[in-house]
Amino acid sequence: MRKPDNSGRVNSSGCAAINVTAKLRKGLWSPEEDEKLVNYMIRNGQGCWSDVARNAGLQRCGKSCRLRWINYLRPDLKRGAFSPQEEDLIIHLHSLLGNRWSQIAARLPGRTDNEIKNFWNSTIKKRLKNISSSPNTSDSSMDQPRDGINGRLRSNQEHNMMGLYMNNPSSSSSALSSSTWQLPNMALNPMNLDPILPILDQQSTGIVGSYFDVQPCNAQGGIFGGSNIDFEGQFLVPPLESVNNEQSGKVGNLVEKSTADVMNNMNSIINYNQCNNNNNNNNNNINNKLAENNVRIEGLCWEGDELRMAMGEWDLEELMKDVSSFPFLDFQVE
DNA sequence: AACATCCTCAACCGCAAAAAT
DNA sequence: GATTTTTGCGGTTGAGGATGT
Image 1 (cartoon, chains in turn purple, brown, red):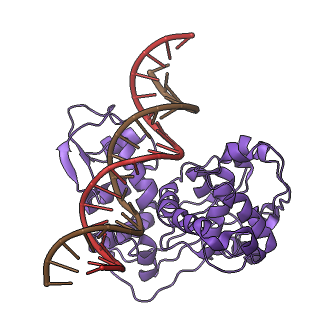
Image 2 (cartoon, chains in turn cyan, green, brown):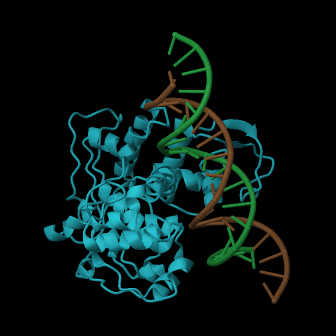
Image 3 (tube, chains in turn orange, purple, green):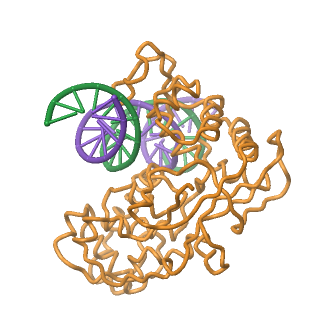
């Protein structure tokens, strides 16, 4: 990991707009900085990131604040290891979208593009490479299609899709965009996420609207006993950016709680981070903390029939022109 | 136990597009 | 319309932990 850099150099990658005389920190974020940023975001919501950096009293450029918030502090992040289903989905989406990590991340709620990118580069890429270089991946071996990631047998449809990808290990939109494909539903339909996204199952519960709920915990941020994450409540926090609701036309309203409630919640998270000052230990994540504190997390869900939307045949040319046509979870702030 | 190598992932950089002035 | 600023993205780096020898 990078060491915190107090040299105060002003970099030239978009951070130069800040007061040039200010000494900007770089490197790892301290718990104190996290606290300042979280507190500011709770009180003011997301605005101009340069203002955030300035007004929150952080010696950071706006870009750094944005990255920290999006990749680490945002309360709706889902931490922990990727599930096999998520792995599969990432592979499927990557076969379609290439290295468009933000587009892929947009369809994996709670995951960040950085996280997915890291996961791809460190894990999936390697596994696929091993598979493709293995003699068992010869055509004859395809008689028994096998999941490259998990080693389990795949459905023929999934296998077909994997084949599409494996034949284009460096596949990108340009590599795939020249024709209309009959895409295997099972493999490509991002709606087949049920095992991955328990939040989608909310639909069957009749809960409407998109929420992310954190129940209040004790003001001192102390540890409550027990572990209890479920998916039935509601709430929200500051705006999740990078989602274009107008474009997608999707629904999902966020309901705001009182600032005091949110502050309590976030203090808990901050305290947790301070207790676990080792930034590398990502298993000690915010979600775990929320669970430890008896904090309930409410997921996102779709209204109406949108979730049931079936997509059997896609025109990849159209798809690549506007990947936002994929169904995906998002929400907006009221 | 000591050293080397591998692996993970937070955070940086540079660029391009969008928005603001 | 030109210029500046901000935002967002993908590629890359490198510290530090894990694993192997």
